[in-house]
Length: 310
Image (cartoon, rainbow, N blue to C red):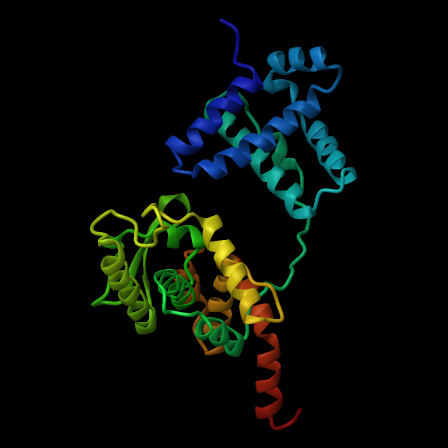
């Protein structure tokens, strides 16, 4: 019996990401693209030669030097350090999977250092600009009420845009003012929301029922398009871009930027970092810590005002 090739094992790994780890389809596709690029690099040559090599390559033929050469190739192509780091992470996960299957005894990718990442300050809005954006949204139409409810909810809770579009009516508790969201890896968490957000949702749902007769229940989506289908993340992004342009904000902001805004305003107001970590659904505290960079100006201002011997 012939041993499985790298190409076959990659397919098995991608399948396991969804079935065993609960990774999303988008994450699976990203891993598949990264691993296919690595396989193509190892099998470079003419078209026929490369295809034949890809079908024959065995996992034990791969070593740390080849992986290092692949990373050097990516650097020369102009890939960012974050992109290279992600591809190295995909390779490490793949080889760990092969070790679990007893295909390999060691992980050749573990010998390489992850490229040191740049730490850009996340884009966010000031409190005044955030209020200006929300208050500028017209609420005379159904679409206007829906859009106001969407962005009130995102700013109030800090949830991801994918978590927002995935909300069903059963996930919202208006009495307790909580949202049950499904985050990365299909992990569920309860998130508080403000009364303004709930009032905006109530107003939208009332108008939705009056105009269309649609009143979502149970597992039916809360935020819908004209065809009463679930809004997509891309739709929410386009709506926000339009709202920002109409409002005349000085900085562009994305749905993820609203999440940054939520975290920054919470920390500026004195919220504990670990509480913000829990609210955002971050696995690691280091992921949440990037938001402390944008509050440094406020820290310095407080220090200068309060310390007796500057």
